[in-house]
Image 1 (cartoon, rainbow, N blue to C red):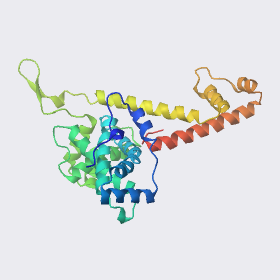
Image 2 (tube, rainbow, N blue to C red):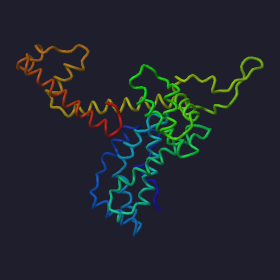
Image 3 (cartoon, rainbow, N blue to C red):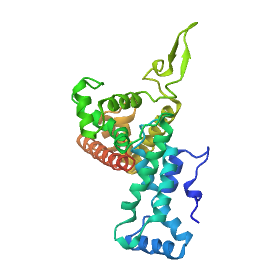
Image 4 (cartoon, rainbow, N blue to C red):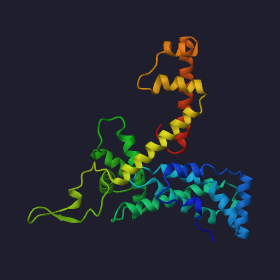
Length: 297
């Protein structure tokens, strides 16, 4: 029986960065290795082969989970759910079909994460049909595309109608989902007493700019991840380039080209060139690493 192993599990002492550092140590597999391990699992139920297949793709789960980081849930929870999908993919994978395991696993990982999000989001079912599920996971992206060249943050009637046509749902579904995404509901039909007699539904009382503890913690995780990427980018520079970069761009009291040219006994122009080269390397590193985790650099 294939069960969760230590590599997939976390506790309260494990944060996102520690987990990512841990899973990045597992080596990637060649297609030939994937086929061999998958056949060992399918034919002989060899647990060690299944575990190697899983651990080599844990980083893929993190990357996919980052795509869903804006749904108000802890990233580590999304990662753990994605890991369950990864395990299911291992059980179902047929190596004789000829494609890479990662291609097959993506569907199971995303499906597991999406189901978890839908179950976590509301007491009211958000996705009762396939079209409504698609609306839930597509609306933010479509809304951003529509509003990117406007000064508005809200959709007008024509835009709501266009979205309903694009996703084959009613305009009412679009309006309702847009509200839920803007303001994560918590038993929104619950009534609370106002004054002596009158009652109002909780949904009428919740401000849409309310930031949950989960979102705050998630933002902290993302900030920590970005800081680690920057530190790793700086570590990739040689000592002189790193010092010039920090002195020119990161210090509160930045040093001038003249000051650095005297320090390193080279011309001002050479310092300028070294600073620009260091900046290009740092930018390239950050962009590459950010893409791995679905971050905006």
